[in-house]
Each structure stands twice: as structure tokens, then as C-alpha cells.
Image (cartoon, rainbow, N blue to C red; front, side, top):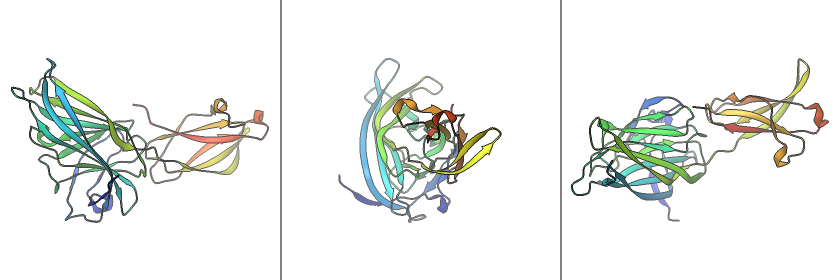
Length: 280
């Protein structure tokens, strides 16, 4: 794989990246190499995915290419996910414009977002909305539409992930009538963060009411995910049982969860912590 040295911007310390919590909507910060040059890294994956969007009659009204890129930060070693709509056009006798797009696959990471305005492009992604589960980021185009042959500026999602997959998706939305119906295309094979591993440490043994519990310190979970304790007597695949409801987490902090000691296991017991997305 070919690697290229580049510079990107938007660390939260520079005040330009906007943290986007689950279930919130934020105006995007803007970034340029001149104002924040410390975020430099390598392009570790890059692809251009062609797309076409059809109108209600099944006719192609808009075509383009979606660029999906992954950068590993020199400063943190963590991954930045970059998206950009490029090379848009309308076939002869057709018209239409892009209104917004949604990236999926970000549920198990924290997300800081921004637009880079010193790269090639015509319109920024001016607002981002994250759903309650946290896995979907919807970017709204400034002025409400991107009209061919315009392209977006690159928009960045800064994460704590260190690995990535091509299991993500992006849905591009378009219209050809103000106030009329919308149309879309969903692209698969888009780069997305791989679920980061949790660090779990078994610590104190506690007695509460009539039972003994073991405390587990969990680190590395994204803000707002849910942690649930399961237990097994022998690690067999079908032997794990859930002990209780899930507990919420705060990013960057240690979360305590508790597992009950089962008398039926005769003192031999294994615990594990399962990370889940919150419900919509």
C-alpha cells in the first residue's frame, strides 16, 4: 500500500474540532493548515467510490464520487476519518443537488468533527448531527445544497480508534425540487473505526446485603456506551449469562461495574464486560 505524508488539523486542544456527543447537533468548526499545523499524519487508506442517484422515474439525475480516507495522527497515533463528495455532475436534461450525507459505523468511539477549508472544495459541511445510539453522523451541506459541478471541502471525524475496517457505510441524499421528495444512495465498503478494546481489571471483593460482588475497573470505553457484566463457570461459549442491566460510561474516565459471585459455581467463576450501544 502506498503511503503519503500529509498534514491535517483540528485537535480539540486547538479549539477547532467540535466534540459531538450522542443525540446532539453541532455547528462544525473550520480548520486550515496555517492555523493548526500540528495535526500531521500518514494516509493509511484512501479510496474513491463512484455513485449515481436516481429520481422518482428511475432516471440518473446526479453522479459523483465519494472519497473515503483514513489518516493516522503523528501526534496521537489515533485515526482520523475523512469524507468528501467530489466530481459531481448532472446527466444531459437532468438536474439535482446534494443536500446532506450520513456516515455510519462510529458507535463505539468518541467523535470530534470539523471542516478543512484550505483544501480543494466549494461547500463545507456546516453542521453535524449524531443519533442517540452514536453510530450515525449526518453532515448538512452549507446553504442547504451542493450543486454540480461543486464539491465539498473535506470533513474530518477525529476518533480515539487505532484500527479501522471497511465495514462502514455512507448515504448521500439529493433532491431535484425544493420542498419535493428526496432521493438517496447508500455506499458500502466505506472506512470506519474498529471497535476499540476495553481494559478491564478485577479488583475488590465487596459484601452487600446478602451477597458478595467483585469490582471491575473498565477503561477505554467511549462516552455514552453501555457496559454489561456477564459471568461463566468455565469459559464455554454457551455458558455466559448476563447478570444485570448495563451502566453508562464517561469517555476518558474509569468506569466501575460489579459482578455477583455465584454460589452455584463453587468459587470458580469468570467475568467479562460487554460493551453495547445505547438504544435509540
